[in-house]
Length: 499
Ligand SMILES: *[C@@H]1O[C@H](CO)[C@@H](O)[C@H](O)[C@H]1NC(C)=O
Ligand SMILES: *[C@@H]1O[C@H](CO)[C@@H](O)[C@H](O)[C@H]1NC(C)=O
Image 1 (cartoon, helix red, strand yellow):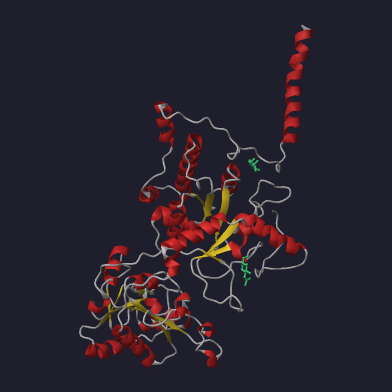
Image 2 (cartoon, protein in one colour):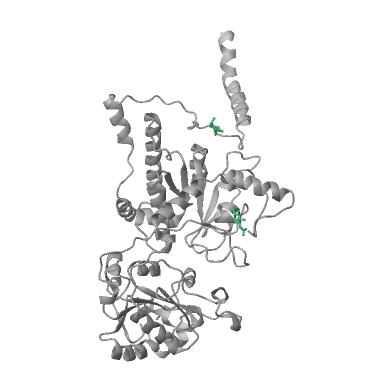
């Protein structure tokens, strides 16, 4: 009896002992071991093994139609449900092609977009400026066989890191929205970062910031770790220069439409919201509202059938908390900021196809100050529509012939293009400059124009260079110099980081 009783008594004690030993061996910083896909030896499938091939293929379910997902989201799916399903399918696809040995040569080079803009662009067809950029970039990556995955930080904080840790060698680049400033930016999130005690974190030299407007987002590593939709217009050797990595997007040239010279005398007024026309300081409208009707009356004399048209959302400010609207509209008994007189308003934001149809029947797009640096003027040019790009004066009144000295410019990059494509006009209250530019633009119809920056070949080349650059070596070089006290980067957050 005692022979049996003794071990029984020891069972819970031994279990507790083993549990404590095990606990001591779970080091929160120790590397988690996942299959190393670079070296994993996967049994190739025989093409005659029909059942196994079919079973594997059934696992690979990347949806063809992202709109399906958007509909699911209406049914209560969160973005994270959408992109995790998509990522899982992509990873299965990768596993299958690795097992077959028939992957695209670039498939094992993975880019991870930690970007709500790009999730919206891919899964909900979002076509604001950032969406157009995401679509262009991702289109190019997929055309060249790279694998694209998505995350944002909706829901699980750990998700990005967990995804990264499954394929750390395959993930070449992580793109982070610039909206994630402060604690939401990967750069500021020690939790994700590789450190001496967290070797399975994401090294900062893989993290690039998504910055639509052409400027550098501060990074601990260097200036080039900031990508942009807009090409560089500042010269290398000037204080204006910012050394970001230009990626951009492509714009198709529209051919075979009505030549501009045969279109009606029609000017598209590019202002999506009626408040954009209000010349309060906050809205930075470039032209006084009453100039539209005044110009229309004059122009219709010389250009038969002339009209200003637009697709403008008339905004209700009845319940606005903004003192400006209260003083200037509500207290004067107005519920709405009206669309200026003299513009034929087609109504709230036309769908893309309708907008393009309208664009193919106008000669000129007239900027009014907002929205800034959007893709629409590029699409206009590609449609044979010239663009009037207004700007404010800069502080040095004597140097306004130099476009670098200008103040606010509606389309920052297009300041470098000149007539007959782009009419850069100072908007400081001189009506003759306004009407003069419209007349010149009506008199000089253009052929569809796409700059070399927006050609698809150039985009693919930049994307390839981005994916194939040895960023680790670049970062190492910067870091080595930094540790010797030599700073080569302009980014104001330059710091020592873990390779
Ligand atoms: C996977 O294997 C490659 C090639 O041997 C090696 O360079 C890499 O460090 C390995 N990755 C991990 C996470 O162990
Ligand atoms: C911009 O970055 C590139 C690549 O690191 C470098 O060769 C070049 O000198 C930099 N230019 C300036 C003006 O900092």
